[in-house]
Length: 441
Ligand SMILES: Cc1cc2nc3c(=O)[nH]c(=O)nc-3n(C[C@H](O)[C@H](O)[C@H](O)COP(=O)(O)OP(=O)(O)OC[C@H]3O[C@@H](n4cnc5c(N)ncnc54)[C@H](O)[C@@H]3O)c2cc1C
Image 1 (tube, rainbow, N blue to C red):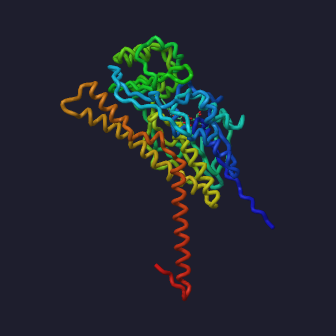
Image 2: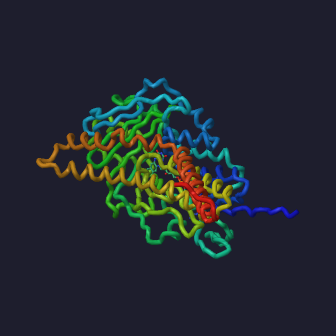
Image 3: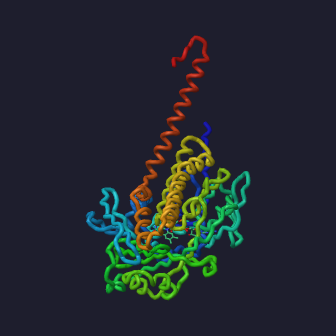
């Protein structure tokens, strides 16, 4: 008797931010995958900023086995705590407010330091599994597989599938979609986390995640669960004042303060509290119609959708991508189908989701245009309040509640159902071709 040994699928993950790590964790569970992972970093560490853990993020942290490590630093609430506030940054006026939701299957939304998220994910990856100091510089696609070359002169391959999880400036995206261009959005983000004690003397700081809006900028304040205080801002900065790749650059207090001197007293004092900030120039790019290429390259996380931090949920989007990609590989393997078919399914499930997100961004821009076109022009505070109300409607809540596990199930159920129907039709056609057997309508 001959035993047929099915070959393993050779997969390379490029980039090990939240998206790449999630892909690694899911793919290491698939016995038919031979996995390699590369990152350009000499060591894996995160710059000191916060990240929101929403309902959909918790769902995936549970699936990834990383929720427990994070839950230790976030508090379960009883539903009475204010979760989010939207305020007018000039006057401090409250525009909208939402209360913490009590989940039965997950802790409430929380905000943690990014390195905690990374450590929780890394805890699920075997030590030394990720090959560091491997900056991808070239991709070559051959019939026998894809070959990778790194900046240090080494190479790896051939691979059956390349997963580009290499962030907003993705080299994999650049290779697969050379015409796709990132542009500077005209905005910078200033971010910092300081001890709560440093802002304890300031009156008027809500005990909730709060956005303080003006016409062109905003400030986000958030007392974190573990005695820390996060401040994250957006400001307009002309292109000529921004070094092309300024990401996580340290800047002095005065550099930040000049953008917010028209804000209410609470925010002026909050902005004055830290000595130093980190500055991030925000780049973004158009939506890709498809995030796969040539049947053996798939983009994931920020590499697939350079949303520039909009929605504050990029890590969750990347987790959703990683889940669907692994499920698609598993499903197609069981059916004896190809990698190319797997990533097609991945694209069919994820691309419409990103289309929906980009549509929301377009609606924000439309809201701003509409309100600015009103004659006689709205007074500044009216404009801020009205725009904030329109942008922060409950209609966008689905983003944070979105359950991709259900979406995937529905998708494969539909494929299975259509396959059964196709088989029945074929059977009926064959039977009707046999003389004497009639097929009833
Ligand atoms: C200002 C701002 C605020 C944000 N706030 C939030 C938030 O509150 N909540 C949230 O969920 N998300 C937030 N995000 C988004 C979130 O940071 C990203 O969506 C998330 O980090 C995406 O993860 P990723 O794995 O796709 O990419 P990244 O985290 O960017 O990881 C990419 C990895 O690829 C590696 N890499 C890059 N190029 C190469 C190469 N050529 N070769 C090898 N390796 C390479 C990098 O070293 C890095 O490790 C924010 C983003 C911004 C900009």
